[in-house]
Length: 422
Ligand code: SF4
Image 1 (cartoon, rainbow, N blue to C red):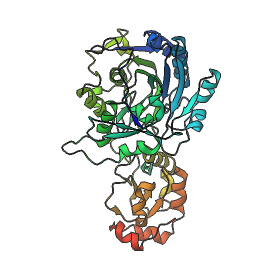
Image 2: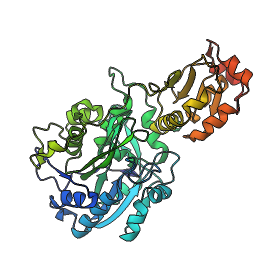
Image 3: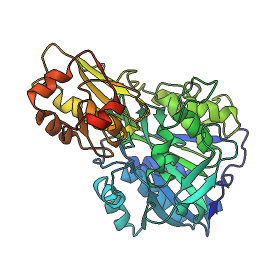
């Protein structure tokens, strides 16, 4: 069955000058409720409303990785008060069980208290969604629930993102793409004539057909630095609500100390007319909202920068493997040199696009399996950090020393004769 693009927002009565409301305070629930109550939600009466928080990972509430359950609770209460039937849905990143993520993040407990249904959007078969104006992609595989609800509300948590600059209301809609089909957005070839990362062009493409009808951005505790999961929690005590997801994201960007114009998926989408990011055209309230801005630290250009003698080869990986590697390095970087010659660099590879890699490279994730004979291969999609250390510590010292030559590994030769270390 073919899916259709999401229609225009029924709450946006002036698309040329969309409203965005920012609230500030310690209590995330009341903050979010106050932001929601600034809008006329009556178009939701008698409708089915799908709340799409960020529950893409297993993380504790308050860690800044997933949406604060209190913000989602306010959305349930506000849309129910407007006469809507409400449910919460998510399709998390590869390797994460949706229902487990709902439990760990505190969303399930909150939903039980309110008797609000939770939907594992990966359970049923996908629908195909054409992206007629797409540049990097021309179709998507969509979770079927998107076609069964009248209104979709994007409820992201405010985070910096190592691939996409920020992840907010537009990017959060990637969690409506079915199962592993999300990963394909990280594996795209470069777009001819463009130096923009293909993932960012693809998200702009996606926003042409999958714009939420309402956005509620949780800035109670977000994440700065190495987002989306290996950064540092950042308390901002803000909630941003808006009828145009681009406008809401633009205001959130300003609060985070960046500009939507500097975020490729937002600037590309706005250029195509999918939404407004020009703060001069957005009706943002209250007047003093910018006083609550507190710049978020940006992600480093090179993820290995904090880890001397570590070289990361990253080609077309997705954030799941990046996070695995980062968390591994944070936890075990002092241990890995027990297993490698002290004067050498340790090479790690993630992602699918490598032609060749140095001998001895630690290849992480199924995407690197072609190079498994080059050094150590840790299967998984993504693997668990502790498995990397187990694999490295299981290497024989002669293998390690032999591996640390200046030579490059030829995966085709290794396919015939090389052997994986595990
Ligand atoms: S192996 Fe890693 S980079 Fe490849 S799809 Fe899985 S999580 Fe993403």
